[in-house]
Image (cartoon, rainbow over all chains, first blue to last red; front, side, top):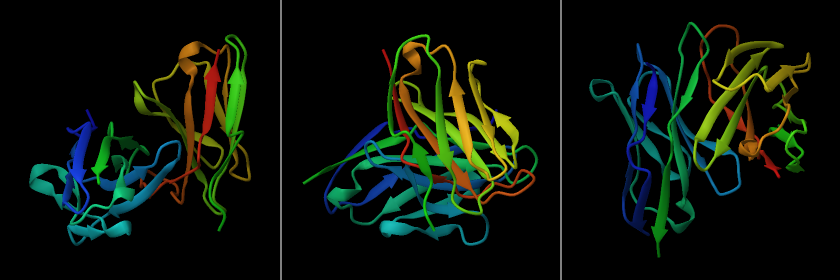
Length: 114
Length: 116
């Protein structure tokens, strides 16, 4: 079955520290991949997307993600976290053909310590 | 371009009532998806519409229904409300076209529904 797994429900980092949020997927082929961020009480905002090509993609707010086909992973990274990055982060996979399908992970809540 | 708008932003209903939520997508977007978000279940897919046709549906009871109009605006309806329907309902629009290729989604701020 197609699925997205974000193994970390909560992550706490200190401001200025580096960050990596994990995302693994199960899909018949290489899907399209996305990361979204949600601040409390708000809708989701797209951080970055991967369709094809260079496996390291840059997004907004200084985030980047790396697609690793062999590991079925699409981990999100940021070299130096800011207090304003505290939010919930969602990984998603989207279909490339066939039945239109969009699957979200369960999210990782990031807490940033001053 | 204006973003995705959802109305109303907040709603309080009583068990057994019905509710209609509205979503206006970004101009030019023909795909609209709906999601239910709760602390316990996370983000759950309700349905997706493209050019007035429902292309995919999540695992929700028939009390949850939706439709899309010719101008791509969408509504979702929940009949016979239950306490468990209390949630943030999110609408997302996408430039997705015909076929199964997906694109990024743009989310509205959501409608917070409270059922008492």
